Amino acid sequence: MKETGIIRGLDNMGRVVIPKEIRKFLDMTEGVDEFEIYMQDDSIILKKHKPACVFCGESENCIEFENQKICKNCVEKMQLLKEETLNI
Image 1: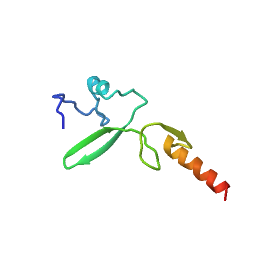
Image 2 (image 1 turned 90 degrees about the vertical axis):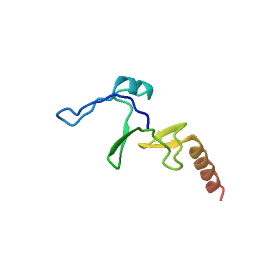
Image 3 (image 1 turned 180 degrees about the vertical axis):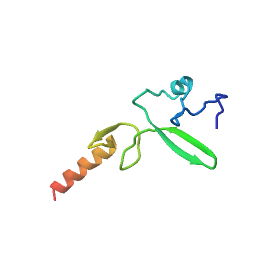
Image 4 (image 1 turned 45 degrees about the vertical axis):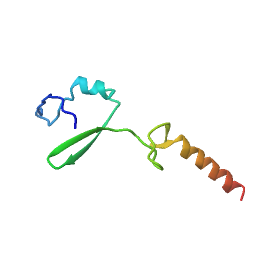
């Protein structure tokens, strides 16, 4: 785990501000990007959320269909399956 030397406190609503340097390093955009939150022993881990294909887990080349991410490869597989099904 990389240490930054930055210490932040909670505000009265339990929020923590993530330093600008870290947001910039992770290429995060306010109001767009999200974090996944994990607990490990006595630590809280924040991980930049990368939406992934619901079928294979791939995070590159995804499109959104009915609020779900689907990658290009799975779309192509579904198209082939549709063609095979229609030819039966």
